[in-house]
Image 1 (cartoon, rainbow, N blue to C red):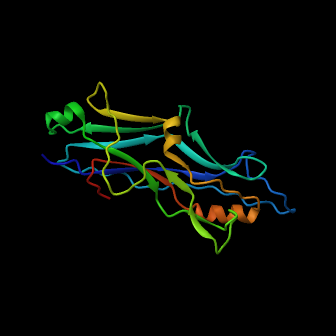
Image 2: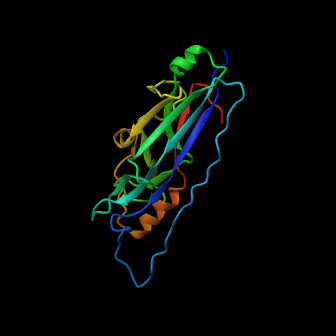
Image 3: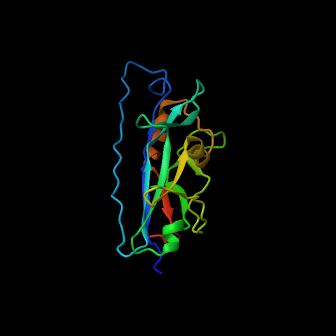
Length: 211
């Protein structure tokens, strides 16, 4: 039996926004520059002869926003369409797959990470410092650790495929800020934005990872 040998990734766009449309700081007559990102990724691959294919779909958008007048950061979850927030993994068995796979799908693990190292340098008081300790912005309940740990509970669909869906609550349990970050100066906001230079990625694997 050939193992399914595939990895599918979905980039979840991260932006820096604000409760009041922007982060708000006392300033001068200068007009703050605007900023927007366009997410770029590569289409998924399929391997001929494999026992099936994975697909990940999501409408999740993550925004790091101003939580309060103390300029604490909050990670907000929202949808990019009219549907409730979701991330859905689909496994479709191949026609040539063994009957056991057609009946039960394959053991799979869904895990999260980032496309680049995103760390914010802070001092002992938690303020930004160019010479501070690099601190990961995000933390994940199920991060990549090199150990295959199946955690997907498949639901069989009428068309013979299998799905696993995380709603907003489940996604919030998976993705979070690593700590409370304070950006009470515009210069700190600029430094935070500079290191927020990647995306969060969700991956699903059968244990044999291909890039």
